[in-house]
Length: 444
Ligand SMILES: Cc1cc2nc3c(=O)[nH]c(=O)nc-3n(C[C@H](O)[C@H](O)[C@H](O)COP(=O)(O)OP(=O)(O)OC[C@H]3O[C@@H](n4cnc5c(N)ncnc54)[C@H](O)[C@@H]3O)c2cc1C
Image (spheres, rainbow, N blue to C red):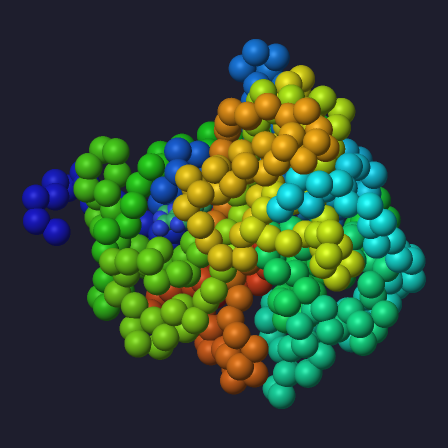
């Protein structure tokens, strides 16, 4: 690129695009293996969907994104490596299983009476029995062909077929962010509401950070990686045709050219997010097939709702009373006086402004309907986790989409990880990314 000074050229073994869960994990592991790396991240911090809000007045914290991790080797090793202590978390408190709360249909603000209450243990046992038939889903999308037909059923039909209804309220909470839960192919529900998550739920073994700061692991990683992380930066173009992949990046310190022997892309592979990359016809064709939901989280003040109150969305007339989206999943105590946590989902992505306006309307409707004395809330913090839950059509799955997607690994010096390649689950993504490392470091 014309006009670049020698100091603007960064030469590394591996250039990692995206510094969320997968990118940060890869950066630390490759760094520890003695490889030179650089991470390009569009945000001002590492961490992606792990987002901890700190109240400036009290210093207290609440989680707007990731709330809990597994107690397994890969998670524990990563936290130990960064010297971040973990503790077993009260997942009721963390918002996973708040079964006792005010049930409201956020479309109307009205109380929902007679909420469906099936046999939870029986439903869960039936779910787990079915899930156990597909152990390969725990590690990725290596489905057999032809793809088992049950995996392609809309989850609502699968629930009926195998008498899982009693567990819907629990499964639904683990499946937050999936949009129209009962219409999603069962394959995707199994990926998000995985065997590992169900086992951790039953065992009560989920963990969060001892210091009530899930962001801490990413803060520590940032300190370790220092200037090898380029924040607030955007890839303008990438050319993978030569000996080195060349990535041109707009950074706060001007244009930089990264020359890397290997590339690791961890960002959501939507075409609009890969603008400037030299995608070939195959990559373009695969990535163009992804659909996604919109998932937004916020901290609200001045809601008029008491600190200890949780309001949860239930569809008054929907199967199993699952919430009808778009809408908030819940308004929930944040642990900080006067502030409520809200999670909002739309089956299709919407603008941040639309999500915010709809959250305010939903709170106001509680008042209009006479359910709660709410006032017009203000946003203290807002985060978009969109694109969330990236899926392709059942036809594409059957036609070998994931075989082709995984076939991209290593082509053109490029490796791929992140939720679209496995699951919206930090621990599982670390395991998936770990398996890519031998290929990435081969020949470096
Ligand atoms: C509300 C919520 C709660 C969750 N709770 C949990 C939980 O309790 N436990 C759990 O394990 N998982 C949880 N998850 C899921 C988990 O956060 C994700 O699975 C994980 O963060 C995905 O990792 P990733 O690396 O694919 O993407 P991300 O973590 O989203 O990282 C992608 C990174 O790439 C950056 N980026 C995107 N595009 C570009 C670009 N063009 N250029 C440069 N940078 C770019 C983003 O800013 C981001 O930092 C939760 C998610 C949400 C939204």
